[in-house]
Image: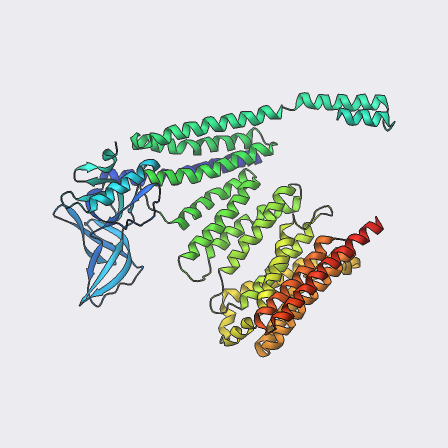
Length: 185
Length: 428
């Protein structure tokens, strides 16, 4: 193979590799959003002193704690398959397991920390979809509304997450029935 | 140019015919080369238009459909690939096209992945992102033959190392970093071997030592003191490499290998000059497991590499080896012996290190005087000053004596510089 043909082949492979990475991210995300199961995760108030990050709202979740057996095999930093269930219309972590479940919706998460309360061990789970990106000038106002509404007892704030094959994709943050994006218009 | 030609003509340095020939030559050159001011304003105009378009899109970003946002995210990447392809196949001989398009493509790769992550709210690990980005940049270095790509690659892998080790809060061998480093070595080897692109060589000569130092610093584990040998040997390698590729016209300040190698060696020696260094080393329980650590093998590797570097350097200079021997060059061998002595006699080792630093300082001053080089002379004085300052921290000397010593050092600085300048004016 002469030098020019080799260069063309190498350049083509390089271009394909560079396009493949972002394209595969889009493909996986679109697949989850199109065919994944929709769950509503209730959000919890965040620390108002958390510095403004600029481009996104930081989400905190209410139902990210899971009970574990006392002779737990889990440690901080472990990865776990977290079985999901719907309780009163909102997502809830039912249990953890080490092996991949069959025929159940699950999230593949990291155990943040473990606390012992009385006779029970509880695992705090790290949800990867804790940042909702917005246009920079709107993110601050959105975060302010989001924080204020956490104290609202009438309207529930929650994140819409599509789940497929252990991966969750955040599609929107809702306050009551309204999207936070619409509230800024 | 016209004024210079007239001046030369009046002084009868050149004849009228030669003056005409020179004027015609430069007139031709002006016609064939583009008006640089036009090029600069063109680039500025294009940048402003581009930034304006980006700002308009950014303002309306949230109102755009996801599909549109995704399409827009790919545009810089595709443009960068087209530009790089054009520079490789149509503008082979143009360095500016090659480097500018490669630089744009690298930034576009990062921007595209980041934008897709934002559009789909994908939370990723920064270390994974940097690794992916580095792997996508690596082919650009070789296919586009871009040196800016190589520099950016070094920044990325160093940041990757820092990020992936920071999470563990402890040192561990980062195998991936070393693989990434080895992958760029062929490009760097040919860059230094060809010696044409001196600016890029100089930039690499600063970036490579910094990156490698982070890499070595990420080792340590059970026997952190052993790292000092690895570091000193590594810095000696840099120092020797700096002298191998250094040209006669190049100053020390623009040679990153020499500058970094020298200063980093001195910093390591200053650290080892404190009694705490040897006292804490004694507290480590040395065992045969030291021979199974990465630190030991890296120390050995760099030690052998330094010997080979200096063998290569002095092989071409056998008859003038004394003139080419710099005070810092044999430090890695001397330090290794002192390190072994320190296992049994820590106080003796500390004294020897201080004497080594003093010797380097004095020899550097002498070298500066012989070379008639104020920078080298003052460097030697600074070494001795820092040594004295360090000893103030771990010895009980009264303030009066400290003051007197510093005044003496200051007067020594003035006297030496005055003597050098006077010697120059007498010789000149």
